[in-house]
Length: 142
Image 1 (cartoon, rainbow, N blue to C red):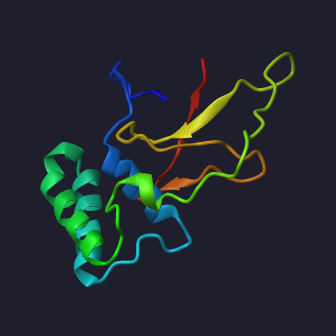
Image 2: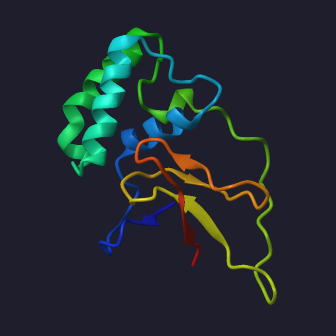
Image 3: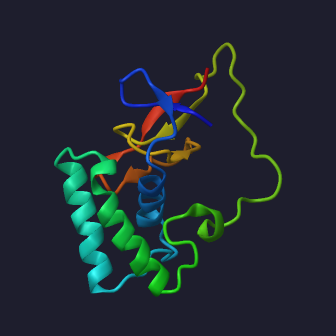
């Protein structure tokens, strides 16, 4: 799925490893267990990103974090293809859009920097981005 990136008019999925880092930081199951060095790398990444650096400028730090994850037994590093929990079988129902119904939307990176996308839950507050310390933003489906 492509999402609109932070007002630049471009379309894309954002920085893949940043999206996976964001998802894992939010995951309460502990899919990002790291030692002290790994935690320092995460803090270095988040502070650099919050200071306005582009994720591509921090690829060396992402590489180091990737190595740390691999050494800790995370077989895919920051790749989502092996460590992302499987989705429930079957399709999840989407709310019906029509008269009297709100438009369909997904929740995405608050700054359009990564490809994290989640379905909204009408009964819960928007999940947060722990990288930028903001809630995910609604993006209308067209």
